[in-house]
Length: 394
Picture 1 (cartoon, rainbow, N blue to C red):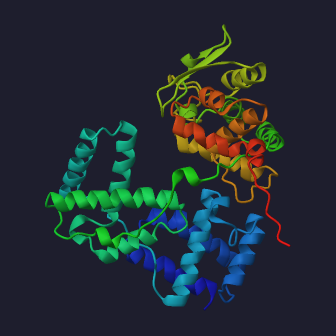
Picture 2: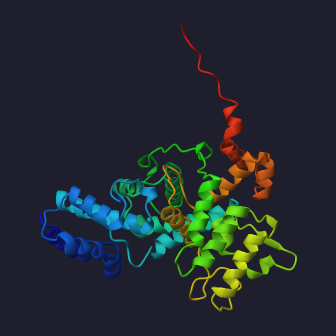
């Protein structure tokens, strides 16, 4: 079938099943129209899509690992996957979410569950994550419509995500539905419908980058043509030098800077630990350049702002790091390259310089001995001493 014919049919069907016009324009039609402009009168197949994306994006978007793509490239590949699936099956694997969100009964069930979690000792940040997870589920599958098939579809929607993420999200929904069964919101037990996903958090190997790779990343930011060049360079420099998390960067206030005494102080959002660091000359210069020449005039107390004067979300900060790695000439391989990789890279560098694991944990503000153990996995030089020789057999 011709590219133009199949793309028109997909766009028409997306509208018929209730997908919002704005979503169609942003997630589907912009990609399809660009493809039609190039090869609209050709037969659609996977080879055509793959070569087109390689030519337009300058990278093998179709075949690269999902995590090696930017959010925009992920959306692009998904759009063309939908196109090819529709051609093969004649069906759209796209679900229209309830535009009005969860109903009153569903909201009452969620609020009761969150109250139960609060009484169990969950902190505010954990409650917010749980609320977001449950709301996403209820928006797609209200309690009155929940069945084994809908749970299976929800499980399948996590394809491509890490096993740790899948386990965390699905375990939360399982617990929520168990609570709903116990309190009469549903009448059927769906516990057996959830797969047993085994994912041990501490088994993950941290992704680290070498000093040379970090220097290349920083050079890319310093030479960038972005209108937020000074801001992005200063943010990434703080994460590289001090190991700050993205949420601490987004919530960093101007009052945290004491240029007179050469100190920067933060209260970590995750642990509440107060950290004080000496402002190194090149770090101070980077922040001063941003404040004097790029920071928009705003009444906000936050240090790093968007062009409109509003604060940044932590995801935006992490997105800056990801885009920086993608733009730099760095072989990422199978490594993760979000903001947390900078934190692990700093830990690796400090350990290789002879610092103990617990000293590094203190520098980064870790209060848990269990978390500190994770840094042992980046101590390659010492781990190599534990290696055993392979016995030889005559």
